[in-house]
Amino acid sequence: MQAQDLEFVRNSILSYLQARPNSADTVEGIQQFWIQWRDDALPLSVVSGILETMRNAGELESVNLGGRTIWRAAR
Image 1 (cartoon, rainbow, N blue to C red):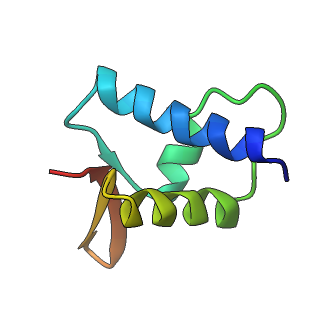
Image 2: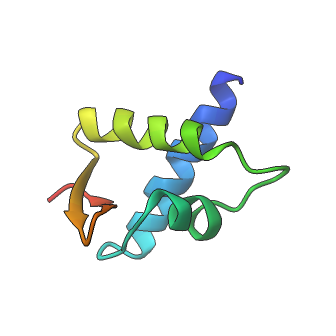
């Protein structure tokens, strides 16, 4: 995996949230609906790691809801 792939995912998530600031979804939903993949989608484990990195940077937050982790813009 290349740094440009990681930056593409991060920028896609930030762009999605800029257009829809109240959005929240699971990693599966984010992978499927928030990111417009140019080629094959990156594995869920990679997307999950990027979400964790974005949370650590203060860009996202996660909440547990019904046993699932939901991601949204940091408030």
